[in-house]
Length: 332
Image (cartoon, rainbow, N blue to C red; front, top):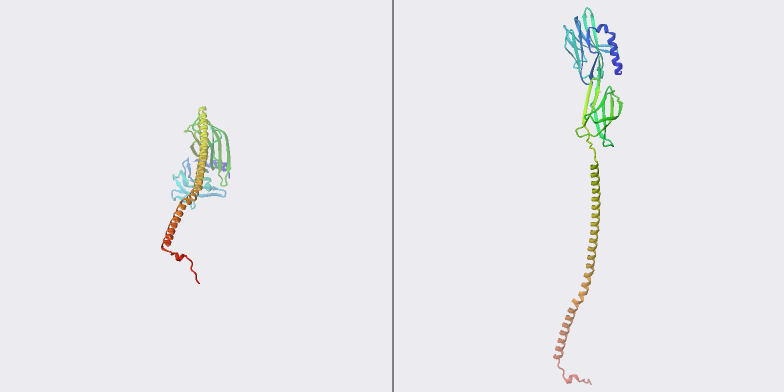
């Protein structure tokens, strides 16, 4: 059942019993948050002899007794509602009840009955309407323009919440509003409002989002990023710094190339010098070998000749030949 039809039904029930409710003061509608408390109160405006006060819930199949109060039996809460319903402001001329942790099943119309003597029952009706509201979510992000920011606020509730964007600085303003609603499976509605915030602001600027559902209200604030206006001098300085940065990068690259070239050239010279030294060393060894070995050989040969000559002379001197030994002898 929609909220409009729900309220219309409660209002029609009140009109049908207008003759009986003229002497009873009560609220036509009680609004409570889901999970909160709902308080119902009835007061008899004329002095009557009241025997008992009864609270009932109006259901499609009929009324269901919730609690009763009388002078003789005191207060009684029916089974199924103990711990959830409590009778307060107990009296025979006025009576109140409180329903705790209300849910969707508690939504509906209730009535109070003053059982009087000899007039009978005098009744008053009041209807409970629940609302649900979750904490809103606020986002602020920069747009393509330095003078604009994109502000988005989203909230979920039942019935559909109403969103309002606001800003603390008067010279800032919102434009180009866009609102989208999404109906969720649990009966709640998610509403998202997006707008463009225009104008320059300082670091003290705040943007807020206020959300309302029936009597429920929530609000959230957040700082928005500071955007400073860029002057011509700032722009020139930025260009100069950019050029200096580019030139420094070019110089560094050039120096790196030169250092690499010098290192390669040095490596090549070192390799060439090493090869030449390795090529010269064997030639000196081969060349010097004969010069070193030849005198030794000559000395050894000379020494051998001297020894041989000496021994030969000694041999010759040690042998004395006679003239007769030199003349050939005849054998026969």
